[in-house]
Amino acid sequence: MATATPLLPLLLFLTLATVSADKFTVGDSKGWNPGVNYTEWEKKHRPFHVGDWLVFYYQEGMADVVQVDEVAYNKCDASNPITNYSKGRSYAFELNHTKSYYFICSYGYCYQGMKLAVKAEPLPSPSASPSHKPSGAPSILPRSAAAVTLAAAAAAALAAVLRLV
Image 1 (cartoon, helix red, strand yellow):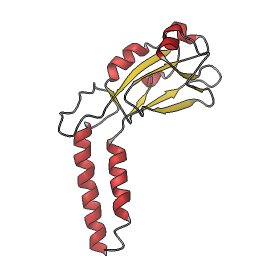
Image 2 (image 1 turned 135 degrees about the vertical axis):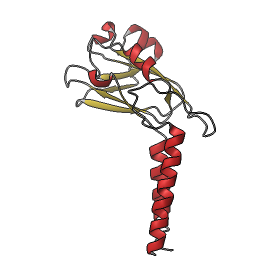
Image 3 (image 1 turned 60 degrees about the vertical axis):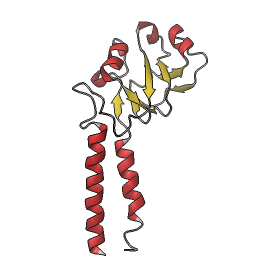
Image 4 (image 1 turned 180 degrees about the vertical axis):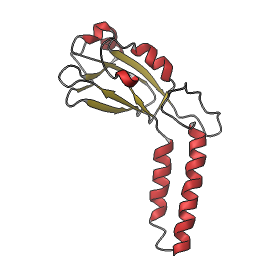
C-alpha cells in the first residue's frame, strides 16, 4: 500500500487538470489573422470559463497579441498594454480570473477587426447541467461527463496499482 500512496496526488491532479479547462484556437483554422470576424468567433464558442485557454496562432513578424483594457480595445490603442506578446508564432493565454479580457493586434490590423473580447465565467457547479457547446467546439464531452469518465479511469488505474502491491 505504501508504494501506491505517492500515485494518489498525481492521479488526482491529472483528473482535475483535465476536467477544468478547454483549449480554444482563436479564429479556429484561420488563426489570429486579418479578415476574421472575432466577434462571431467569440459568440460561436462562448461560454468561456476560468481555467480555459485561448491559443493565438499568427505569422511571426506580421502580427502580435496585445492584452489591453476595454478603453484601449475600443480605440485600438496598444500604447499602454497589460501584456504584449510578439515573439514566435503562437501565444497561449489562460483565462485565470472571472472577468472580461481584451486582445488586439498592434500592427494596424485592429482597425480592420483583428481584436477579441471574451468574458471568463466561473466554472459551473458539478450539479448544474453542462453548458451547450456548438459543434466544432473543442470539448468532446461536457465538463461533468468528462469528470465522471476521468474519475472512473483514475479509480480503475488506482485499483490496478493496488493489486500489484
